[in-house]
Image (tube, rainbow, N blue to C red; front, top):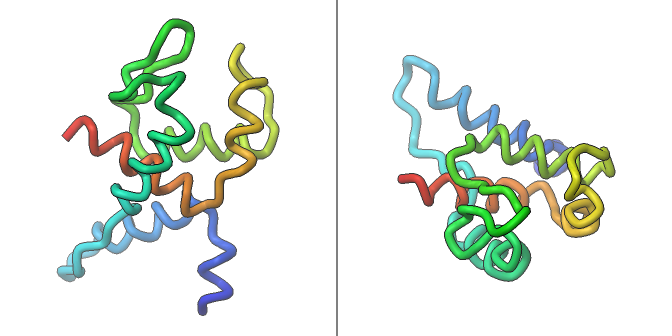
Length: 115
């Protein structure tokens, strides 16, 4: 089971937690990602370009206001080396260092800023 969970993408993990919360049977609260770890990673890797509250700085886009799915998708695409947008050369090397768990934690932290 552990081996199977390790092979899931961050978006797959999100989908599983969404599916669990969409059933009629009450489910235990399932966190999408770890907000505290996401915040620490954001401060270290993202804040300089996207700003302290993810509202964007200069030519770097705002990250707030997007869904977890959107953020996970973008980070996974950057990590794969897909080229889109003018900031790909800056984002791809950063994203390549991120694990699925890192991506989910970052995305969860960023979306928590809108709460």
